[in-house]
Amino acid sequence: MGLSKTYLTLLTASLLIGGEYDEIKLHSLYLMQHGQIEDAIERYREYADLSGTNDFEVLQQMGLILLQKGIQSPDNQTFMMTLFGAGLSGSAGALEILEKGLSHPDPQIQLLALHFIAKIEDDRTAEIFNRAMSSDFLAIRMEAAFYMAQTKHPHAVGQIEGLMVRLPPMFKPFFPSLFALLGTSDATHALRRLIEDPDPNTRVESILHVARLGRDDFLPALRKRLTHTHIAELEAAAFAMGALKDSLSIPRLRKLAQSPTDSIRLAASLALFQLGDRSHVSTIARMAKQSNLFAISALGAISETEETLAELVKSNDLQVRTNAAIALLQRRDPRCLETLCEILITDSRDLAFHPFHSVGRTLSAIKAIPSAELHVKDPMVDLNYSLAMREHLLRESIHLPAEVFLQIARRVFMRGQNDLVPTTIALLENLQTDRAIALLKEGAEKIHCPLIRDYCHLSLFRLKQEGPYEEYVNHWVMHQKGSQLIQLRQLLPWKYRLEQTDYTLTPEETSRLLIESFLSIASQREEKSIAFLLEAIQNGNPANRYALMGLLMKATE
Image (cartoon, rainbow, N blue to C red; front, top):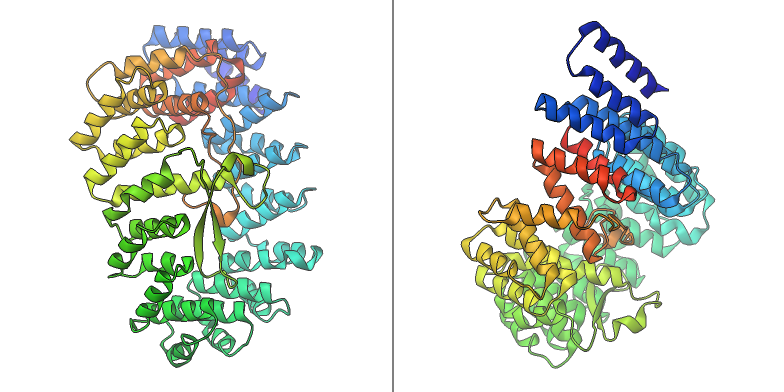
């Protein structure tokens, strides 16, 4: 109804002004309103050709009309692509469309809608989160609680506490992170109660999140935990003293650094190091040499431990070698190169990687698991996390000496490590050095490696390098008219999201390259890029037009 009123308003204005091209623009809106999408775009393109310019307001209106049509479709694929289009547009006008996703029976689609709603800055989002807390699906309510905490929603404490008391006690350890994130006075009161909770897991999670968010107002309560006998709680409390730089706890930490329990001894030694006392670094190094993986991992944060790690990275033990390499990478030491490539590049062992934690969850290490494909159904092995971790390590390798990073990039290309190709090329593009650009140009000539070749052309196009790169990208995109544009990669748990957004595109090769190509074209914000997107919407895969219209709206906002 709102769009019909807009159309009538524009029509009235046109008749009053009598503009030469207004009738064509209004006709394109009329056709779009009546579902004649190809004809509507053809009519608009006629206007753009005649006038020599684009009318961004009309394109925005056409986009909203199309998205409102798409969100009414009973087809799940069309519905999901419409949500993507509305989300990609970033338009507050699309909020009503996204909100309809929360009523869909598929919880995955509800999560998608909630994700995009959280990215739009609008007063209405607060009420939408409030309603999402009444979802039939626990995952939706937990995600809504997370967003309410992030945005410091005025009703967040009441809603989160209400959800917590309705769930079985086993869920309570998930809630301290939400109250800590909120940081309001009401949330602080709730957090103080959770630190004294009868459940030790809830107490530990409360201590950890208070410490990680720098809440030194909790120090008096936390110091008391240093005298408790529960191992996980002692470890967490020791960690908190270091994270909050509490010098008053040093005497007690020195006693804990002599504990017979490895995790307590290690956590206390690390806390003392954070407080400026290096006298227990030798304890950590000694534990690392005894193949304690938590100690090896901890050395990554401690200066002057590179030689110890360099010895450990030569170990025959895969687990020791893996964690030593990651710690060396953290120290930005190039001696991690060979084992880092062993982690990044798939070989006959088909390694997957998964984190594991100490009993107090302050210490972590990585476990390498051979034969990843055999563990697809293993709940303890998350292959999505494994890929996210490898991408994270690859991004961190950009801080190594330039020649070392280029060696890693060349190995990714040589071994055809396709799941890392997009990240590798994005890093080379960000470097923008002569050698990085030269490597991209080499990749663009790889006839037998189409994914590398196509991504390199896209990168060189974005870098505005002289050559046939723009023409190549446009030609490639228009030859993918039938390809599916967007799929979802599985959502990672909050603590495993690393530097990823909540959702990311699937690494499936053609789909990911296609969406990145369209994003690059849209970002040019030029007349020819708008014309290209219009042609793709008009003549490409009909399932893609909703997401592409969102990109067009973003490019013309």
